[in-house]
Image 1 (cartoon, rainbow, N blue to C red):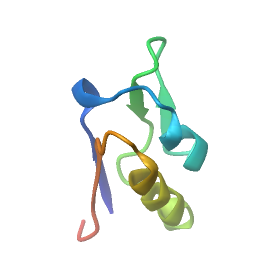
Image 2: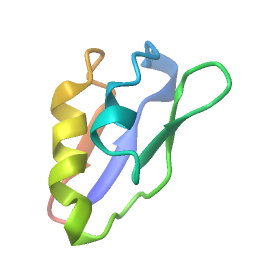
Image 3: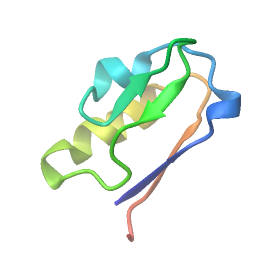
Image 4: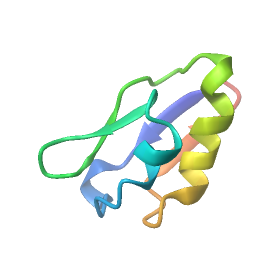
Length: 65
């Protein structure tokens, strides 16, 4: 699994942090910060939930990596 974010399009909702705080954070402006590009398998479902919860769809997950 490899995660990518589009920080320029982030609307600072914080949904990603609520779903997967091990993987995502927010900077001082509220913009998404990716903590783990390739998270451990035990947080993979949380990362997928964060992707689905993002109202701006700025999170992309490549499952083949």
